[in-house]
Length: 287
Image (cartoon, one colour):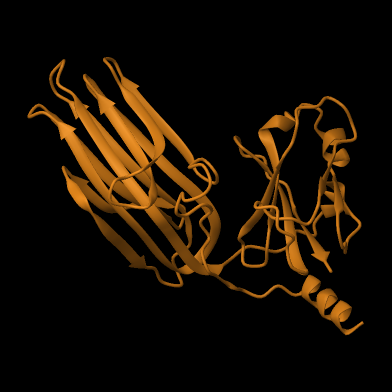
């Protein structure tokens, strides 16, 4: 009974918490590089490559390698991860970069951090840095950090001369006090429905109300994300493309590795992979 009362109290009071690391898949050690990470690239004419890859570098643990190569004009690639906004953050990453280019080509490497909704260039290097290096910065309580990004720009000034930039990244780390994780109680029952709540082994998430309101929703572009009190992403449940209603998914109380999560308060958020649609956050309790 006492434990049940504690859980009920936690369900109504959310206090700021320091997250140990807000980054998913920080070291690229056991899971594919694209677990938690996104990328974008561009190339113009010629033989161009702009892809992320994961390989075991000969002097390092497994790390993510970004490669941008072009034989004409230019190419770039960015690898980034959005995180739950946090303040008083410590950001850290280990990296090295190496260029294979001619006298007519150039490469540039950058680390960006999204501070107060604006990307800032925190580190930049032209040419080689072929040894493992640590970059670290501590931000103030007035700086809200919401993303980190790594980028390469490769350019060749003369046709046929290749610019080839390689950027190895490992052990990405962001800690801080998470902000903005709380239940949106305004019209919440009109959107996500979760039952039972509290739950012990499994709970059903119903999207029937959303499907009734917006029949044009493409469910394959959405996912259910589950966070803990610190803002750490615990589980992502993809949604199949379905024209039928009601649409329901089940959370079995397990994290991304298949381990059962501890008793406590969690938050469910329906998120879209593209666009600006925003849905309320729902709170649930596991006991």
